[in-house]
Amino acid sequence: MADAKNIIESGKAVLGIELGSTRIKAVLVGPDFKPVAQGSHEWENQLEDGLWTYSIEAIHSGLQACYADLRANVKKEYGCEITRLASIGISAMMHGYMAFGADGKILVPFRTWRNTNTGVAAAELSGMFNFNIPLRWSISHLYQAILNGEKHVPQIDFLTTLAGYVHWLLTGERVLGIGDASGMIPVDPQTKDYNAQMVDKFDALIASRNFPWKLRDILPKCISAGADAGSLTPEGARFLDPSGTLQPGAALCPPEGDAGTGMVATNAVRPRTGNVSAGTSSFSMIVLEKDLSKPYEMIDIVTTPDGAPVAMVHCNNCTSDINAWVNLFQEYQALLGVPVDRGEIFVRLFNLALEGDPDCGGLISYNYISGEPVTGLAEGRPLFLRRSTDKFTLANMMRAHIYASIGVLKLGNDILFGEEQVKVDRITGHGGLFKTKGVGQRFLAAALNSPISVMETAGEGGAWGIALLAAYRVANPQGLSLDAWLDQVVFAGNAGEQVQPDAADVAGFNAWIAQYRDCLPVEEAAVRCKK
Image (cartoon, rainbow, N blue to C red; front, side, top):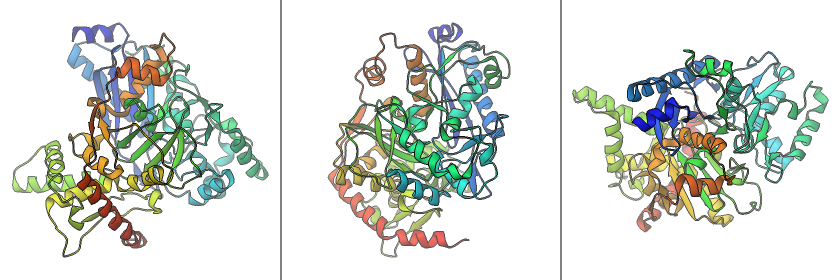
């Protein structure tokens, strides 16, 4: 504790903040990269006028509440204040649409990655670029707004992601880490910048509309891990810490998306490595040795925080439906007058799932809180299916829900490992699905038919990952590449605990996913029902 207190008081600590879908989390790390303090703030998106959003007020107050919680944690544990920081990193959920006018005010409410209203734009751009442009990417949102004739479009002065926006508030710099930038419009791994041909094609596509801007005019500057991304301004310090205790001057690393921080937190930025992040949404990131043979609608090509190409399978839904079922069980316990800690319910139900049948006894779950582009659904309806002859047990039901949280992920990765014959040496899991030891890890190994590693730091998540990138910005005197720095300095050979796929689990998951595919028309019918 004395060492941690000295680190904090001397201004040597590094801060990482990630704005996730349900929680904003702050992690303070020391020179050994281990967390010394944490803070958090719970929040939720809202569905307004048919679009998922977080208000600017919620973003501002949430950040300040998260930092205040971190300050309180530091005061409680060490009896001191955070006055200076060595560096800061900002991360957030990737993609989406944040458009600002010349006065710095947002023009329309933030449109998050969860929205699926951009189908026409995404399809046209994918065809024009010969490159899969997902529904949630910023360029899809921008072009859809243009097609819709939205009045704000000519007024756009700056277009960015949530991480880029918060970074702008703290530094005044309009920059974005290359990993997050690759979810705005494709980047060129050779130039480490937006793909020039695609930018030119987009400008030509909209030229007749005579907007007062070109695409590059409104996009943030694309920069790679380790680059100078500005420093905390006096205004930024007062915004983050309205108490006035935090002083300006800390260096900031390029802001990144949650996919990039997940890669860093799992030491998966080198070719032939990969990771799976499983929380509110899920995604797998496989760092490629070579380009895929063709574009796939299920697979997005993005980059690592230092610009290497990555095949990403992004699923809009993961653990939210499990959370809803756990809430139901917690309510039942309260009804009995035997309250149980929610965390204990998770652990007990996850471990019980291990006793279920490998094929879940025929039970099928669709965890679609929102639309799921990978399976072609613009809206979601959580759905649980069973036949009268299925084995309807609590273990099978829970196993089916966990399978559902990674089912769509399997569909995309079957293309990578099957059709494209992509090779990986190591896949690491992180996020809430892996908190109960050995359960989510075992089922993911079965789904991907691949060994899965989980590190002790798996629960630290993206806030820790962006803290590492912030440390890389200021603590790399040898000038090591990001992958070498992570290997040699941060992880020092620690690859985590690995689980091999069990043959019976693999066969069971394959049988389950076949039924999952066959029953998709039932989910489609549920979506068509507007109730």
